[in-house]
Length: 335
View 1: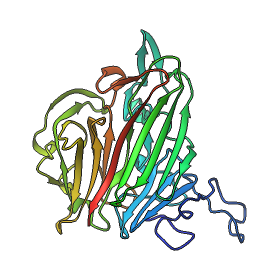
View 2 (view 1 turned 135 degrees about the horizontal axis):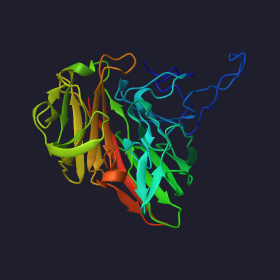
View 3 (view 1 turned 45 degrees about the vertical axis):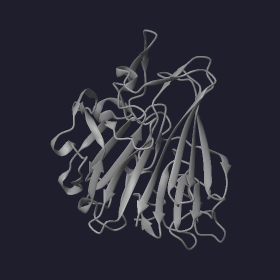
View 4 (view 1 turned 90 degrees about the horizontal axis):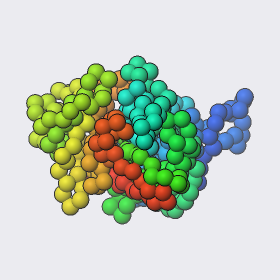
């Protein structure tokens, strides 16, 4: 499925440098000049050469990235919200907080339970938030949303997300947290893209993840320990996606020149990769048969810390008052 388009092109959005309105259609919905409406809010379309990226107002999400018409991420329809959290950005924590509980200076903090089946607080506080436009140019767009002090997270911070198409037509994403509080604020940043390689069934692709350790989680997906990779969790040499049924966080990543790279490759040599900088010491890999319209789908999620970092302290950072922190990741392809 690709987003439908009110004009020629694959993105289904307004032209570069413009936006489409959010909300729902009017009663008639078909009147001449009626604004295009999307369940994921305003759509920001970036084009450079044969590259196309579509970014949403909702959760500052990546709805689509393609090269030369080859779809490199999973997408969804105009009337849908991101299935399986596809493409959304995550702040001030990624993944899960066990029971939604953590402690600040000895005082219990209770977050809302948003993953009811496992009784966890999942994917941060901005999953359903609207991000405002901060800046845009021909090849980039920057969106931002505040997190106001609230039960479970008594801090005032802002999450700023920039998407840019680079000269080599790769996608570069910079996620920045800014602390407007009077005290240091704890955080983990992350993102939730699903990668694909055009019409090649995901099960036929070989997944390579350069990581030496994996986190061992319980049935609620809360890490309890870590261990060296082995068997079907050792993806350093690549395994066919059809063989995999995993929902695993990795660390001890192989950084080369400050970048770690995880790749899906087809039998004809074409590939798509997610890369992340050294601020992202973790990557979560989720292979699912529940993505709408796909027999298999593969999420490769860059993260500065793993699930339950607010309790374990693993990968948890504290941002001093008035300061900011940026993680950088991106997607590239060999087609």
